[in-house]
Image (cartoon, rainbow, N blue to C red; front, side, top):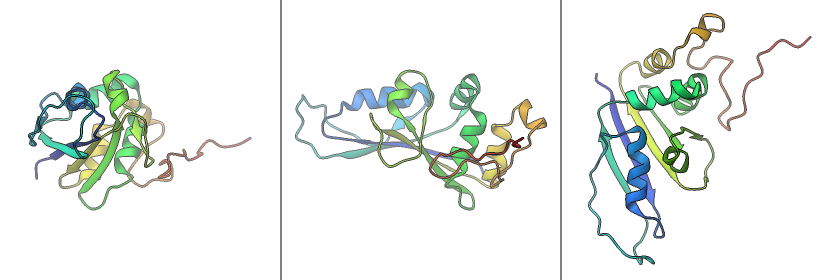
Length: 162
């Protein structure tokens, strides 16, 4: 099964849709919005809505993770909601506009979220391979290991105390 990637974001009445699309395209340049909307002047009288689309590749996203050296954090954040062959996670729109990836683990965030869903066979193994780095030769990692961060983002302590 090929990787299926969905990318969406909630648009509040006070937000500018074009800025949200700009944030999404920083790491997902091939994202195509499936929804149509009418450009409005501020203040808007529209209700909140969701823009969504699919992408073909996570290459630029994973390049960003490597540049920031957050592959283990990314692996944990992307697998917290892993269920069978599906997962979902969110990153900060505000951080994306700055060219950075910041995973959102709580319910609220300043500036909104970009929500990503992934589906494919053996997704856990695939994410493990995609986030692999040389440090894992010293400290191996795998989905659901005792080194994973907690669902609230608190890291697991795995250093031995003297």
